[in-house]
Amino acid sequence: MSDSIEVLHELHLRGFVRQISDETALSARLAQGPVTFYAGFDPTAASLHVGSMIPLMAMAHLARAGHRPIALLGGGTAMVGDPSGRTELRQMLTVEVIQENRRSIEPQVRRFLVAAADRALVVDNADWLVPLNYLGFLRDIGRHFSVNRMLAAEAYRQRLEKGLSFIEFNYQILQAYDYLVLHRDYGCVLQVGGDDQWGNILAGTDLIRRLHHTETYALTFPLITTAAGAKMGKTAVGAVWLSAERTSPFDFYQYFVNVDDRDVSRFLKLLTFLSMDEIGRLSALEGAELRVAKQALAYEVTAIVHGQEAAETAQNAARAAFGGAGGELVPTHEVVASALHAGLPTVDLVVAAGLARSKNAARRLVEQGGIRLGSRKVTSVDDTVGPDEIVADGTLLHAGKKHVRRIVVRETD
Image (cartoon, rainbow, N blue to C red; front, side):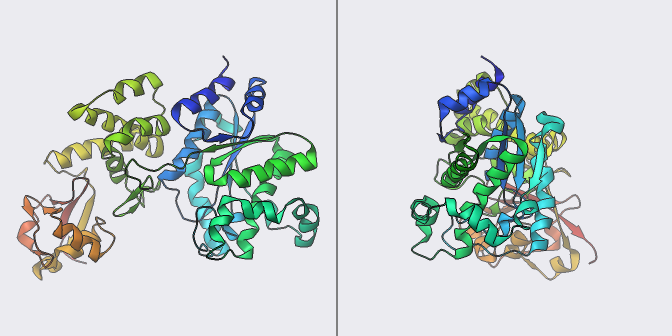
C-alpha cells in the first residue's frame, strides 16, 4: 500500500475522520499520486489554540505522506465572521488587527508543515476577496447558491433563533469561493476542516463542480471534547494557546500531563506522531503507571508546538516543582517588596501570577482548599502574604494539583 493510500487509513486509525464526501473516489485519487489539499484558519486572535491542532496535525500527516499542503489564513473571511458553532455575532475586528493576528499565527502553522518543505503554501484569502466587485461576484458566484439549502445547514439553523446577520450569511459563499480559487490556481482537490465546516466545504465542492465540471473532495474531523465533556484546551485560567507568550511551555506541558485518564489514548493518537504500536503500549498502562503515558503525551505535544528544548525544560521544571524542589525552571512571578510589607492579598497574587482568571475564581480556589504557598495551605479569602514567606530563591505558589508559580521578590518597581 502506498503512502498516499496509507495516510487515509492512518487518519481513520487515529480518529481524525468524521465525514468524507466520497471516500472511494478520494482513495482512488490519492492512489494516483500526491494531491494538493487545504485547511483554513481565520486570524480572529493573535494565536491559535490547542483545538486548532486537530486540523494542523491532519495536515502534517498528509504532508508527511507526500501531499502538498495549503494553509489558508483568512484575512478576508475574518472580516465577515464564521457563524459556525456560534450563538451570537463575533466581535468585528479591524483590518489592522486581523493582519497583525495573521502574521502572528503564520509561524505556528508553518511548524506543522515542515515535512512538505518548500512545497507548502501559506496564503491569505484577503488577496482575492478584498478586491472583489460585489455586483459581479453576486452575478457570477452568488447565483449558484440556494438560500433554502444554506438555511438548512447546521451552522445557520442554530443561529436563526437569536438572529443571523446578513454579513455572516455571506460566509459560506466566501469559503466556497476560496476553494474555487485554490482549485483554479493551485489544483487543490481536497479541503479538510472541523465537522462544523461540513456544509461550507460541500458548498465549495458543489461550486467547483458547477463551474469546472470536476470532482473535488471534503474531509472533516470530529469536534474534540474531553471525557468530562469540556472543550479540549479549556481550563480554569482560560484557553491553552500555541503561543508561548499566552501559554508558557510549562503550562502547556502541565495541561497535557494532567488530562483525564480516559483521554490519554485518544490524545496520543490525535496529537502526537508516535507510532500506533507505541501508542498501544502506552495506552495499556494502568494505575500509577499511566503517569508515564501522560508524561509521554505532554512531552511529545510540547515538542511539536514549542520544540524539543522547550519540552525538555518544561518536563524538568514540572519534576522540580511537583517534586518539591522548585528551582529556576519553574515559571516565575515577581512581586515588589513594598507590596509584601503592606500585606499582599493572596487572591490578588493568585490572579497576578496567572493562576486564576479573576478574583472571584481565586476566592473559589481558596474556599475549595486549592491554594498553597510553600508548605502552607491558604484557608481564608482574606489571607495576605508577608515578606517573610518568600525565601531568597523563591517560594512555590500552587493552585490545585496542576498549576504552580515560583514567587520571587523584586526590591523596587
